[in-house]
Image (tube, rainbow over all chains, first blue to last red; front, side, top):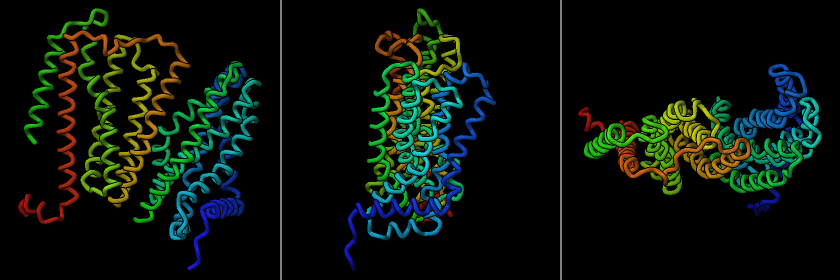
Length: 229
Length: 223
């Protein structure tokens, strides 16, 4: 039996694989982004279209919509690999599942969180966000969606063996998303007021690092349990 | 364990009669403050109950003890109900004192999040057909929630102080008079005893249900 390659190889190999799978199924990549843009239309339609009403709620609204987009894309992180058996092969490969989960969550972030953060200035314009808020919006979404992807991976792994886990996944993950939403939305709000917002961004980055370290443990543990059923 | 139930009920009756009937009325809130004799113990147990649940889950995951998973499963609904009682009594208390049924105060919001955390563990537990997977996944969720509880608590606290200045002040527990504190302590002890009784009783039912095919359970029920 040949020696098992090191964890960095497992990380890069599974990361590349995730991107390749996503490149072959492009609609899955665009769906959360289209959702992100189209649900934004509801806000002026449902509340009021004038800038005076939209501007104060814009930071919170954009953050909530970004959070929902990530939430909706979560169930496919492990689902298709669970169904076609590749998740089982990954566990059997002898590689630490911890690194594979990190690779999958990072790929998920590259495919949803990163484009969401880059698209968010367009939404800012549509929601009449004042000019001071844009840098804070993009930076807070970059770190924030990173945490959302890692924390969400736990929920995705916990419900992977359930046939209809989508709604349950949202139910168990929403309370865990509270700190990220509070910090993300308030960083943009303080930036709009012209006050320093680096404190919130630093806390978001801390949550991101914490979830990067801890969430893969929980997710890897629950994948092993799900495969045992 | 009928003696445990008896002790709990006696303490509950003593505390309730003492608190509701004999403790003096508050100088500012009048008689409406008396709801603390239900509200405070329920809130205490709602918080402690989550840790009971998470520790049971951790024990089950680490030492593979079946009984601690059963205890964890029993703790989830009790904790959710206690959190609900805490929210409802707080809301009823809020109407005469603050003039509103609901206020997005940091503590209230935190209790609401705690309620959702309980519901999540409970829902995950009931959605698996496979008992082993149900136990272990909900134990992992309970543990993840435990890591998150301090972060959620701090962030909600910080959010509240950022959004609204402290316009509402509750009477701090340290500034409570002894004539009110003693019945409150009796009630808290009563809630702890009743909680223990309910937890053990539900766990016994759970054991009987899971072992219903074993000989000793069938012998008990004379089949």
